[in-house]
Length: 345
Ligand code: MRU
Image (cartoon, rainbow, N blue to C red; front, side, top):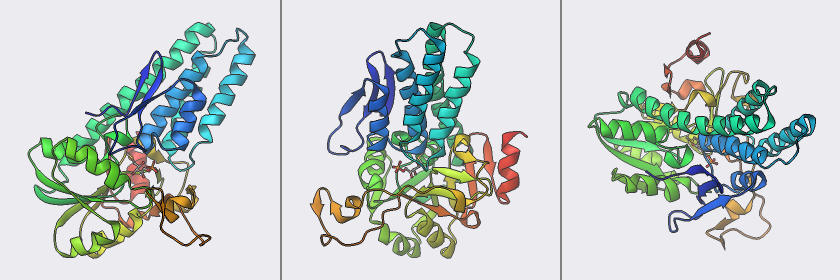
């Protein structure tokens, strides 16, 4: 399977997702600023991958600190975390990862600086392996919800490329296919950044999973033709009541699914659940450059100076979600209770 990101002695290596599917190019970020830039420019993207990348970026930054003075070390650590946290606002996995590194830092504060550095590097690598294990568990939990055969629609890329490996929504599809289900994936192209066309279609084809690419405005027509048995997407942040932020266009797909009586599933690791955010209206939505809308593959497709909106995410109200599939189990409405139950509290 494709390696989305990897910790090496030279730095953090990423497959450059802005170049896919035509070029399979790997970039090595040699310091934490380069990792932050890779997140900002979407060389690496997808909520869980952003979280692991940030943790590795912090580990890289800490590894390079020259000071032997603890308070200076602490100040620099804080600055590295601040830079990472300023990259993208919506995926809560980023902030979850930073907080986890901060907690590790505090736990190591009585160790030598050398031991603290190594401890933080180990923690980032642990987050990498845990993410893959969580996706595999999610796959097992979700595979049973997939139809035995037929079409499943997904939006954006919630695959191996969006995680440390295996994927969330695509992980469930992978597990269902591995269990013998005969699925055919319909991948929304996902304007404006085209994660569906460029990334989902690419990674599913690499795995030999039957895939049909459609433009976003075709989803209703395909559903009306009876070709879709389930919709499954990933998530960037799930509020305490189950409202879910995911790639722009997800909300429209959820409403279409409801209209056609098709179950709409969200697959996400528990690190995407943000119990401190009560509902979707409180989720910060990233606004991206207008050129992503006015240009296609570098070519201008709209009049110069036209007003543009480019929210990168929308919020699907919990009432449209049949189930939230996590590595800890499957939550169903009322989500305020079922998600809390999965915390073990
Ligand atoms: O802007 P992106 O490409 O980072 O957005 C990605 C998504 O919206 C994914 O669906 C989400 O992060 C889940 S990935 C497992």
